[in-house]
Image 1 (spheres, rainbow, N blue to C red):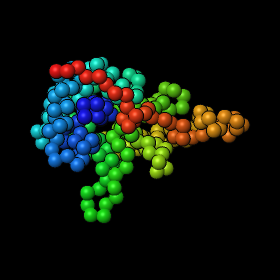
Image 2 (spheres, one colour):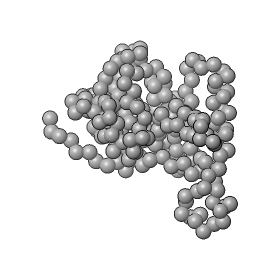
Image 3 (cartoon, rainbow, N blue to C red):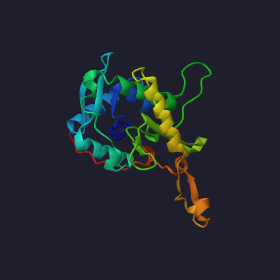
Image 4 (cartoon, rainbow, N blue to C red):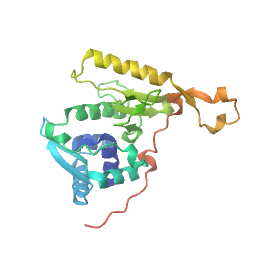
Length: 226
């Protein structure tokens, strides 16, 4: 459980025990085990809580470089891919982060209404705080969340969660940047195309993107007894 919670915080950056319980142990009767894991992470200097949501749920995040490195070990991601520890985000309620988390949960868990579609994948199939360079290398696009589900034919999905805090012009500019990014073509590293002509090894950027291994293939962590 501690490794699962650590990896989930590595993806979400800041989350509540309730959100983590629904994503990691949706069938559990309570979030007690998750809260115990969070407390243990704090005891080991890998996690911390520095605020509450508007509904008074305590928010949790990774603690410093140690927390980021440990979560990266669980997720199989290098330090440069882990983003920040979201220090201080909970002090203001982390409203945007909470909305992003609920969006990811909707994908993973599916709908709750009768006849609603089921979920797909796990929280570890996602990434947040990932920046992508646009052609020319000077401009970037940074979605709120990135999802890959090749098992259902989705090479990559970039998600924007807007709480009506962004001007329409800024939202429109983001779509223009995304269109430019998805039209970009790169050389494929797929071994199956190694014998093809150079022109045939060029694919759209999204077909070549590979996020790091998920928590299903995580590396185990050694925990000190406390």
